[in-house]
Length: 258
Image (cartoon, rainbow, N blue to C red):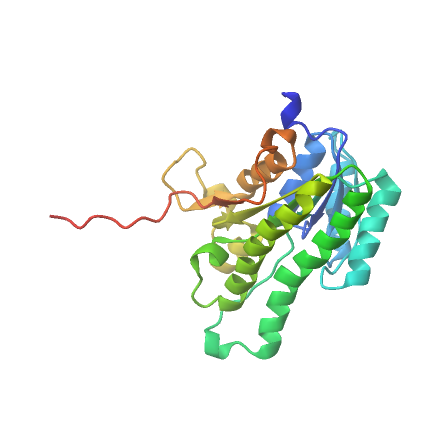
């Protein structure tokens, strides 16, 4: 692998990494020789992911740290544990998220606050705590997760779309503020990805996605993890404050038949 694409020797935190995109991303970093901190609200699940990494022949190591990104103290403890174990922090991947489908009039105040708290407020906590640590060190990268729900709008997911739109805007602003500190901030907005959550809700598994097809509407977690790793490396050094949309074939206004 060319050096500019390498994460070898780096340390990354991947929030929401008990399954799906987060789990695959953590394993991709370990495949590349990075040490990873696997974290979510379920200690049991992240213990399994970390053990899978450590019991494999991957060159990177992993630890599991339980963390609710809505809890500032928990986020600070997460970053402290990372630095204590691996000596620093190079990449923060803000993947943790949640949603549910409901019409706008049917969303309670508690439901709205919960989704905004996890997706936007959690990104605030993790970015600020990690950013302060990176400023004390040699800089780093922060990679946020938005969604096409936040860039295009999302009927029946207005709370989630609004929170993810906030993440997109935060990414651009934070990238400007942190650039002088040697910290690059970028964002990924995935479309429809075949994760375990999608499989349980909609009955579509990653095994049913043909990656060789260009014309398709569903991706797999590995394709998103590739973008995360790219944004964490020097290969993306001129990409700052951007949101990369990954949703397969773009939506276009088709010409009417004449």
